[in-house]
Every structure is written in structure tokens, then in C-alpha cells.
Length: 325
Image (cartoon, rainbow, N blue to C red):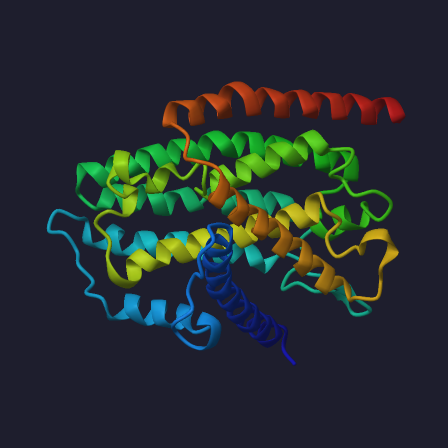
């Protein structure tokens, strides 16, 4: 079978899996929030509410799609697809497990972590262009705030990655997982792990850092003028990014597909998915627990607390690794 056909089939399967996972992750969040707030959650569409994602998709597709007169027609229509494309592109190199035939991934790149950082940093263009191209001051203000937030927290996130790379001695994602066979990196790199968790929540605009959707301040933020399916594409990108940072947390800090305590009675890919699900549950738990913080405190925390801590952790890690030889 030609290589391009193999890549095409893998991409189609992975795209279907990621979209399905996004749909039911959204349903799971609504169920979990209902459980934590002592209410039933979605339970009307289908048995136990399992068809609620399909109903939501149909509603968005049937809603009227409006374009403001003052909007830039091309960029206004293009912005949601930029966010969606960058969100899905990351999965081209994420490994989900290993077998006798090799790594379970579309592509195995030696500098995988650098590719991840490059693609993830492009996601900010969808938000900034969406706010600017709407031709309204409220979305523009929302996009500027969101862009500043994402850029600020990307710095600390990148530094938390570097500590892991120094300890592992490689930039390959499967190489980093292999280096954790004796000890998962969230133990020696616990400070970097905490920094990563906080920055991941801020990067994906989730509570308590969901200033993008702060209705009282921003009138719904950068997507104020969007409606219909284009409005939904931004939220698809947000949930897919949540899955992405959960996968990265599993690969860099939680041993990837390595079984805990030598429990090899489950395949490695199952352990990987369980770790991703646990990180997603933590996301949802935060949303049900913490209130939204003020924007100036959000930025001050990123620049004055997280960035110095990440830098100090990087310096200490480099010194320790150098002294060990």
C-alpha cells in the first residue's frame, strides 16, 4: 500500500476519533458539572442524554450564519478554520502507544516537542483575526486580551517543557516516554508540572482563566459577532486543545503509555487514554470549583509568578543534570 494512502487512512481514523471524543467530552463535562452541582445535567435527548452532542451540532448547523457589514469578509470567515486547523494539526505527531510494529502515530518526528510548540503558537491567530475582522470594538478588545493572555502563558509553558527535555536528553515524544520507564517526570520535575498545568488551563481559556468568555467585561469576547456553525468551530477548537494539552501532560510528565506500578494487564494505549481522561476530569473539576479571576491579576500572575518560577526550575535542572555528568 502506498505511504500516502496509509497516512490518509490514519488521518481519517484519527480525525473521526478526535471529533467523537470532543463531542462526548463536552457531554461528560455537562454531566460532571451537574453531578457536582447536585442536578441531573443533560438527560432528555436519547437514553441518558447520549444524543445531546448530535442535537447541539444540528442546532448550530441550522442557525442563521450572519456576517456584519463592517467585517472583513475573507478573514472573518477564515478565522474559525485557522483555530480548528491548528488544533487538529498537532495530532499528526502525537504518539498514543507502541507495539511490535512501532509507535502508534501518524508521523514520528525527532523534534516532536518543537513541532508541537510551533503549531500550538499559531492558534492565537484565529482568535486575534476573529476579533479584528469582525469590525467591532468589543470583539477587538476581547481578541487583544485573549492574545495577550495566550502569549504571556506560552512563555512559562515553553520553559516548563525545557526542563523535561534536559532530563530526558531528547526532543522526541516517544523518546521522552521511554526515558520515564523508571520514574515519571512529574516527580523530579514537579515544579515544571505545576507550571504546565496552570499555563495549560490559561492557554485553553478555561476557568478560572476564561477571560475570553467573560460576558460582564467583554460582551462574550472575540466571538461576539459570530453565529451558527462558525461560532461552534471556536468551541470545537477549544475542546480539542483541551484534549491536546491533556495528551502532552501524559507524554511529558505522566509516563505516556507506560503502565503504573507494573500493571501491564491493560494495553499501553489504554493507560495513555486513562491518563488523558484523568487530566480532562481535572479541567472540569476546576470549572465547577474556582471563580474567574480579574484580568490584571491574571497577567500579573503569569509574568511575576509563573515565569520566574519556570526560569528558576530550568536553571536548577540544568545545574543538577550538569553536575551528574
